[in-house]
Amino acid sequence: MIVRFALLFALFALFAGPAMAEDYACLIEPRQVLKLAPSVQGVVGSVTVDRGDRVQKGQLVAQLDSEVEEANVLIARLRATNDTEVAAGQAKLDFLKRKMARKDKLRSNDYGSLAELDEAQSDERVAEAQLREAVMNFGQAKLESRRADGLLHQRQIISPVNGIVTERALGNGEFANDQAHILTIAEMDPLRVETYLPISVYGHIKVGDVAEILPEAPVGGSYQAKIVVVDQVFDAASNTIGVRLELPNPDLRLPAGIHCRVRFAAP
Image 1: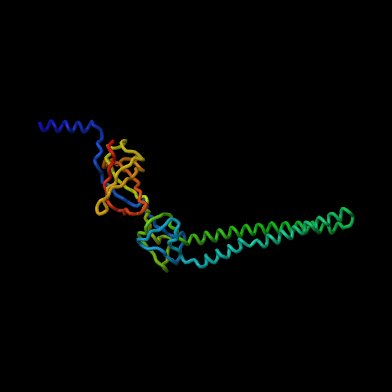
Image 2: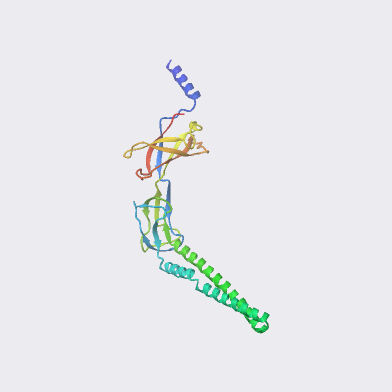
């Protein structure tokens, strides 16, 4: 009799469709962990943050020694704003055009010589060429200023995200080569929740669904997360499917690297 009920229960479970468990094991992780390094080699001039510090997107967090590059930026900016040569060339050309007009008028009235008119025309053409060169030099100075800014920027490390510093690998005076990083920053908002579910739930959960996240002690509590990834490739060895959820953490109150349980709504 007991065997019969066991068989009936097994058949019911088989044909009743995939039963969502009450909850599944999961892990709360940072959205991403970034190892920050300059794009050029050099001696570390300053590191303005340390392990555990919060950083904002766009914040300068470290910089290589850059006295020469900073001086080059100032020089390049000065040249890029100095339009004296262009203004002088324009004034000279305007004067020669007026002179040319007077010579042409005198020549048309038979009061000027052909040689004087030809000289005025030549002076005007030379002035036009000199003005074009001045304009080109001024444009080149602006490009050189951008280049100097870029070279300085290569020696600066700007945080690309809001996050928390988890490692300070190098300090002031140390040499940063092309294999070294200076800081590691973890992006903590939103957090990433990873879980693996039995493939029987495939089709019963989808991107955009909301689930309940239950962090383990000592954190505890209940939080809402949204499914952002449902893997399309199953793990045949374990008969599981990977699912990723996004957990808002605007005040950075929740830590990462903690185990949790995830609970989905019944299908």
